[in-house]
Image (cartoon, rainbow over the protein chains, first blue to last red):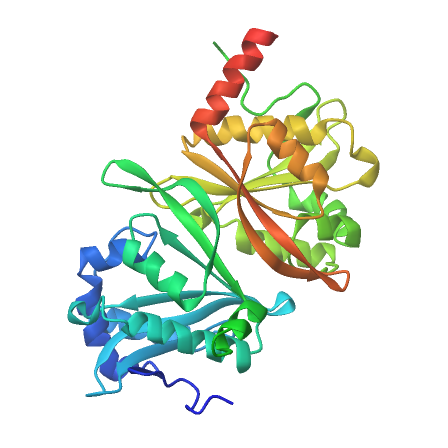
Length: 188
Length: 191
């Protein structure tokens, strides 16, 4: 048994997304082009807090996703989001997406910590079999973080993204429950 | 050079006419072997009425999907469905799905011809940069067909589906417009 409660890491915890309190921060993040170019296939699309509140409330009714806000343990600050989503129940397969919207909290291990907790939740609570993600080839911090969390490279979609007048590859990564379980054994 | 976008030698791509086609499409959904080759969704037989509702909800003008009936030119009978879906905003790529529904119509080259037509549509009409296709690991026919038209294996989603009481990989195959143009050029020179 892990001594920590579920959804709590070393530096963060995963909590419910609250449209009332979180939408303002999400709106600021949606105006950050650097952030969105790491995160999304879609073109940049700034939103107001009001628009985002409606979208967040829609998301609450889905039965194929577990979205969370990422809060720091110290100071309880909202710094980003992580979601187990697109769950394909018959096959126990799902996707994960993550974003650390608050610039000052990037590159400090919060994302990796959040990913580890999301995987623990996905594999031991939702009982999924595998988790997939895709990441743009220029998102080197993202790739490093996913490798650290245990994701394995599964392929490369050639020129699957067009940005700034050129094409970029999109990398596919995945982790199986059994691979994740081996990582939990000390020294394993 | 004038080319007919929708006509091959034996098959033609046309609109799906649900009033007539729904009965045939519904019959195909009762063939588990077909569905298990085509799709990752659990097999689900549909009535003609359910087929109509499903197609009408999926084929809205803003859905970014182009779906065609594959018909035999000689007698206009429906033998398959081909679609490009989830065409992205910046028109970089789309997802291909292709099925020849009647088992007795397979192995006659209809799928190959359909694939050539839809790639021409994707690259010359929609001006896409690439086309993607998910293929289940045990569908060797599809893998060979896609490879023969220039697709390459690009990623392997390990053990992504559970079928026949075991797990199988799902392969992500892709073709770039440049690959396709090169192959077309070679075929023209050869013919």
